[in-house]
Amino acid sequence: RKEVEQDPGPFNVPEGATVAFNCTYSNSASQSFFWYRQDCRKEPKLLMSVYSSGNEDGRFTAQLNRASQYISLLIRDSKLSDSATYLCVVNSNNNDMRFGAGTRLTVKP
Amino acid sequence: GAGVSQSPRYKVAKRGQDVALRCDPISGHVSLFWYQQALGQGPEFLTYFQNEAQLDKSGLPSDRFFAERPEGSVSTLKIQRTQQEDSAVYLCASSSLRGQGLGEQYFGPGTRLTVT
Image (cartoon, rainbow over all chains, first blue to last red; front, side):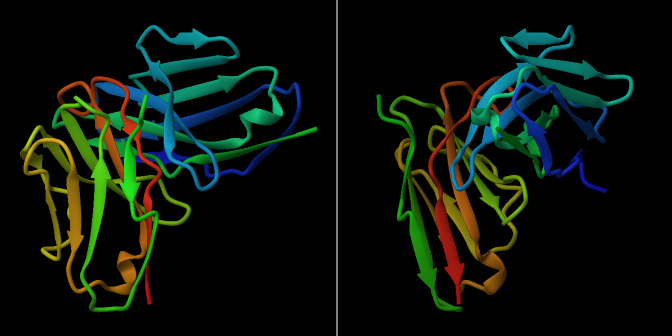
């Protein structure tokens, strides 16, 4: 079983839709959590960190559930430019960043 | 300002050939990371440097893989006797912080290695 698991998708949604991705992790000692965005044939870029209390950045909301060991990302009012692969990233105490395989999102007009 | 740069962007190697991949991190960044990304997968951690010290090389898949950062800035990932399973994108990332979990890593564009 992989340490970080994501639904690979693809998620195909119309513009303006709300879409949510989940990510589960197996290491209960994990301390830090992030969502990165990767466009096709480009490098990953940090989208947002995920805090225990949950956090919001514009149309994006991230939640962490430590008890169930999952992280979520909610995108409201989807834009065409949101089309990308979203990578869930988890860090444990041993200084080891683990990336999920990513969830592919396509927003259609 | 300048981001992380990597060279070459593309490399085709014949099986058994040695390759060297270069990473220029953001100036002043203490931490440097190498990742391997296979098609359709997320990046897999290879190794981590803090300045010139290689603090973690647990992700290097075999002793054919070797990385160095002798002066604490530019880093080179070397793969000896390349095999077809080494074909992947090799990503370099840097961070101003020490350690992996403290914040944003800035990634370079990657080197796409194809072993024929």
